[in-house]
Length: 534
Image 1 (cartoon, helix red, strand yellow):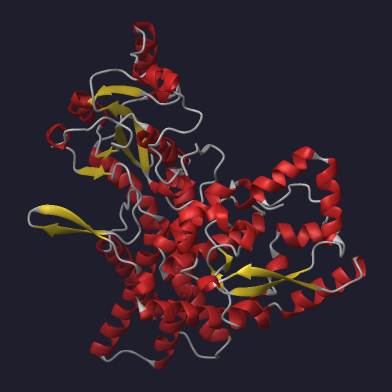
Image 2 (image 1 turned 90 degrees about the horizontal axis):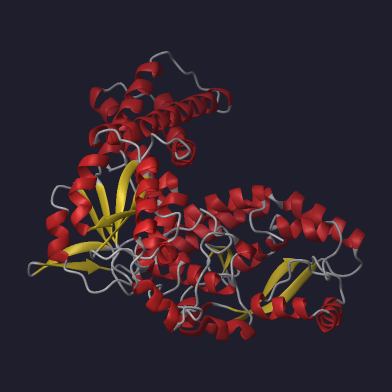
């Protein structure tokens, strides 16, 4: 697990930087020889330093004040929240009027204004303005809580004043059902649009020029929708890292002693301490120089912890990290299974015409069975047969062996990833289509009903892939394999097998029903845009 990972080609859909970096990203990779490590320790030449500082001065214009940064970041989010609430009210009112045949009076305008106001107020209470650096999974949860709380508050106030009619109650119920879908999706869309604007977001500095600091700089610059805008890296020691190590695209802004000067000049509100790969640091010195910063984020240095649901606890005057494993909760497991069964039954009914159409086309294009079953490793190591629409010719094994014998490059690709970008076994036309749109996996809905799979989980593996999971294999066995998962929405076939293992491990360590819902939402986008599919 110590090989280097090319993060540049990974999509923005990944949940966190830990999931796409190696398990211990601070262990030198196999390509880093002792000579390269010695080269890291040499100081850059004066010419190089002057060029890099000049480049930093050009790139970093004077920033707005810290309060203005927060305001500019929050306003678009608040406008989006108001629009989403208005949309949910309108949709629910139209549904009640046209579908249920109930009247909608003009007094609903006052109710709508109250709902929009409560939506924004509760969003602020739940920490959604400006929600800088928020994980999209946590933001999804908070947006759902905000929408439900806003509607419940208005209903309770109407009950207290005796003005709640049955029509208004039906509109509120319909509004909650539509709002919990519209609000998070609108928030994601607003963040994506605003991330393209230079004025949006809060500026930050990365403290630590090691591998962890460089990974964070790349991550936040690519995931600009999170609202953190790193302006560069400062080191924990006075020596200047070599440009070949830091990278020509990462501005070097000085040592830790420069932090206060940078805070005043660039109106910084955030510093992220990333000590991984650096020499042992003095946190007292860091805290001293960061005393005037309102937000200081400190990362663990040399190990991967579950991050989504971690919280801090005071332990005898020392900070402790409380890690909650939701898979140990019987209620959590029940909710996941209930969620699987209900959504699967709805999907089977809604998609039955699609099933029939795909089956007819497969029969027309390639004589043979419509479905294909293959033995996979399931929950707790139990073997089961995972079903798919047949997307390959009936003599697929013979065709594969023939091509692997003739083409060494194709054989190497198969050995590394167990997949082929240009697979000769695929049925022309329909085979490529159902694979790129993931429609070939629809029959696995029957596996979900049978309790062999889940809607969301690690990709089901064959016994020959167990050795590739290494020490992560026990994590794989803790959950049911999924039709979709974090790997499928984070680049899919564009990621390496090692990255896939890390993404699956991240999912298991950080599981919650909110992570499942987030992945299902992202799956729709992945299917529509065919991200990473071949």
